[in-house]
Image 1: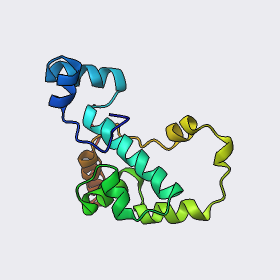
Image 2: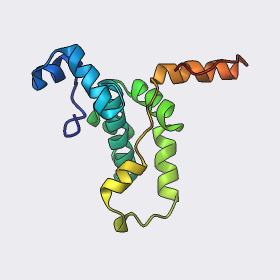
Image 3: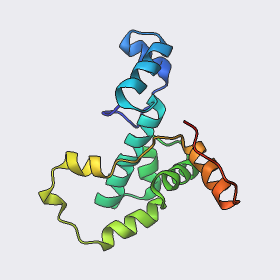
Image 4: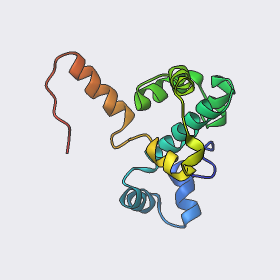
Length: 141
C-alpha cells in the first residue's frame, strides 16, 4: 500500500495478497497500525498529495489523479476535512514560508506531516456539524 497508494486497495485484495481471510486481515491490520486499512491508505494519499503540492508545480487536478483519487471534488473535500485547508491553500502557505527541509531527513518530514485519522472522516464531519449547531456530543469510546 505504501509503494502504490494511488492504486485501489480493497480489503479483499489485501487479504488475498496476505493469504488470510478479510476479517482476519482487517482486524490484524488495525491492531498493528492503529487504523483500519482504508484510513491508513487515506493518510498515505494525503501525505503524498501534500508533498507534491509543496515540492512541484503540478496542477492540483493532476496531483489528485496521481495520488489515487477518481474525482477532484472528493479529493478536495477529503483533503480539507483531514488537513483543515484546501490543496490550493496548503500550496500557497507552504510556498510563502521559508524552509530548510534539505537538512531534515525525509522520513522525519513525512512523519511530522502525516495526517491524523484516528476517527473516520465522516465521523469528524458529523462531530463538527454537531459542534456548529450547538449540540453537546461526546466522542464515542
